[in-house]
Length: 161
Image 1 (spheres, one colour):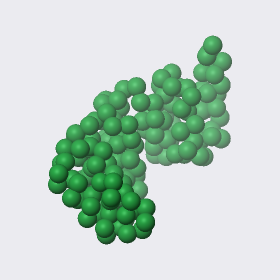
Image 2 (cartoon, one colour):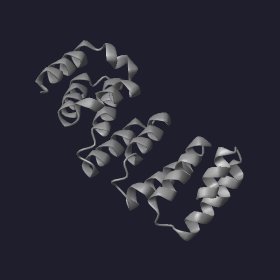
Image 3 (cartoon, helix red, strand yellow):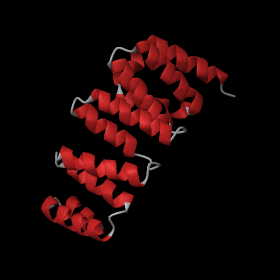
Image 4 (cartoon, rainbow, N blue to C red):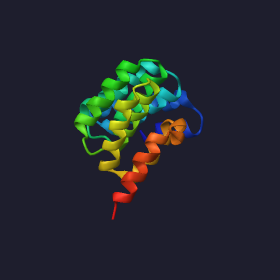
């Protein structure tokens, strides 16, 4: 896998894939290997292979810190919004203390015009991890100007000791 990562850094994706697939032949149950492989496939726009790799990661290690965000991102990119919701909901079930998933879900709800639901999820995220609320704006920069969200943030900021 290390050689695959090195070849990828050198711009030789064919050799990278070859080495990564060999590594997976030896360690088919290694979630991190599947994750790295999925990242490369995503980078190469092989969306089907990336999804399969990410789904393998989520099955092997549902507590992987990035897998639910990355998998939901692929579904957003391909316009499969319903599937993205499902992935985020499963991620929140698997990792109930991962505020990043809540902020991503909130951003998605706002993009779909579900503002009331989005605000509720933002409030939940703020309660769980106030510091990470900037992740909402990384995903949906336009929400930084939303007065309702700003009011929620100010309200939670004043509550913190």
